[in-house]
Image (cartoon, rainbow, N blue to C red):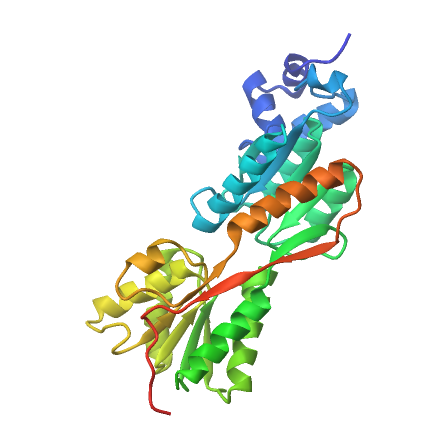
Length: 329
């Protein structure tokens, strides 16, 4: 007789709904996870999700793990992935992890147990635990937004985008620059984008750059902007994302100053609202829809056993808004 979720719950001493949450990547305490995991390993339990589909060679289900659903960039990529997969008769199973690394790991395991044909991980960082889990699940997998040598990846051209922005700011005559970035655990945004900005500035003769670190949210960016003005006197603030730029603008307004009359601001992301606000934001717009379509095509090719490039790079457009003014050198 096959082991059921009810059996697992009884042996682990938990509710059936708790086992179901665990299998579907939901929130379960670490202690409870350990008990359920042990029972599953001992009973060699295999979930019967999509049992009917499993009679066929493929399920036509693709799992997509996203850090959040309220991000303009992530949601645009997700919609493009879903639309392209639908065109090809695939169903998308989307899991949001609320930027918790442990949930990403659990979601990888959960999707593999549900026998999806492939998994797309939209990553904000990749740890050794990620790699260990990816190697263990033996399912075609694509990482979007981060580069990992052992895994097929699609990334934004963060270095060149940063380099372009750095050169533009320098050409506008700015010599005192502040940069609000993010933690370097995010290789793409925290390291490569920053490196591109600094080298773009440097090639144009700008070396006076003060760097600061913010979370990805507007409130923390507003807080960090106060720190920027306490520790430096920039004529321009380059921000790692448009959201961070909006936080900086909020603080500048609260201080009774104006953009770009008193301080210039630039960002990355190219959100639609960046063009609507006044002054419109100078920013980099990454080709998110193109990335989503590319991701859908790539994961399907991987599930079919076809050769795909180990690394693909999505392009960007430079959007010159009104938020960066020219200054005298």
